Length: 204
Image 1 (spheres, helix red, strand yellow):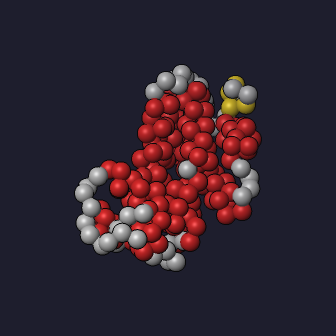
Image 2 (cartoon, one colour):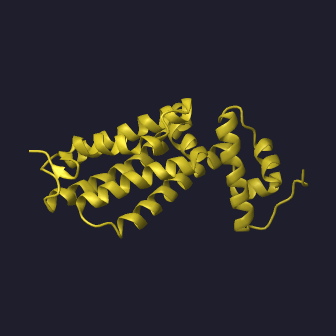
Image 3 (cartoon, helix red, strand yellow):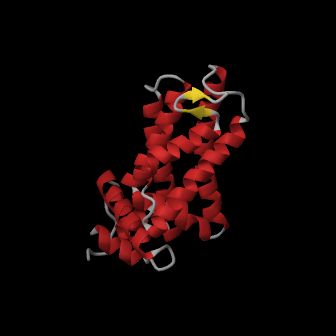
């Protein structure tokens, strides 16, 4: 292990520590993870760790934000080129499932572990969830406005979609099944039916 001295504020060092923290937290859980574990896994030093984060709690919260930013950036990018209300909703669903699968460690931290760690972590997790409920709500409202789906309460529908995705991803992370990417066609069909769409057509 390297000596405990401050390192320069380089993005490479910060990224390396974040990546190591994600892996260690996902493997050992929040309570059993020590800062020394993160330092060792990152090949960094305690000085380097404390240069960027004052505590284990802060880097854990930072990882939740990292996952949220990553998912939101991917959503915004895909939604910018999607066409039509249903196309945007379908793109949003696909991006969520793809990102959960690709960044499983971060998803585990943001969705599963943060839920049982007390008020500070739950508040942060809820803020993240609210960001994505807002994106889903925004696109449901747009689909209603352009006539792609029948009039519904977009807030309630967005909460239902988020709750369904949370439940599926949480179970997958905890048990390994169902794989969200494999289950995507079924998830898509069920969620679209919940807003009045069957095979891309409005249910009469």
